[in-house]
Image (cartoon, rainbow, N blue to C red; front, top):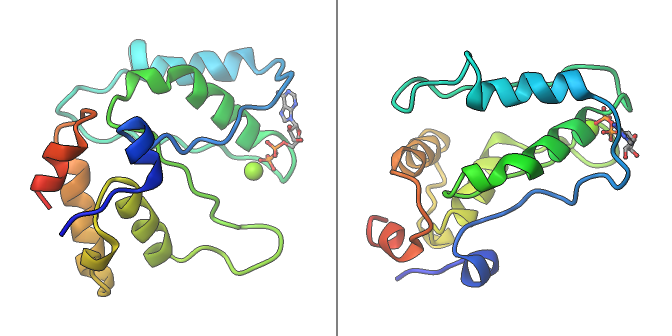
Amino acid sequence: MTSTSPAQELNGVPRQLPLAVRGFSGRVGYLASLDDFLTGPRKPEASGPVVISAVDGTAGVGKTALAVHWAQRVQHRFPGGTLYVNLRGYGPGEPASPDEVLGGFLTALGVDPARIPGDPDARAALHRSVFGRSPGPDPARQRRHL
Ligand SMILES: Nc1ncnc2c1ncn2[C@@H]1O[C@H](COP(=O)(O)OP(=O)(O)O)[C@@H](O)[C@H]1O
Ligand SMILES: [Mg+2]
């Protein structure tokens, strides 16, 4: 049995980024540094390690705005989709748990929620399997592998 999230039914791949900040300005140097990770000397090998970029700074300084603005500009380079999660580090409510985050990503990537393991290690392993597939907007093929 398979299922798809509404986003996949509409678009074929998840595109979870929130809207970019209206009137975003400045941050030219930071945007260029981030572009370097895709096209410059720091561009990763296709078969190389996953690159994780973190934006650091105090609350309200503009980390989310920068990350979302840049990601919106380059997401066409990622045909497998774009995932986003609010970890709820500040504000009301409990911070997001790893299980919750992985479950949300797996569902967005087309895994039937009924087939997402409850065990944290198994859930993480399935996440690695799903991420390890070659990217491409072909949810039908992806579902056959799950
Ligand atoms: N470069 C920018 N241009 C315009 N507005 C910005 C910019 N960076 C941040 N903001 C605005 O400042 C506020 C705080 O930014 P935010 O990205 O949420 O901060 P952080 O994630 O660091 O807590 C938001 O309302 C956001 O829209
Ligand atoms: Mg933020």
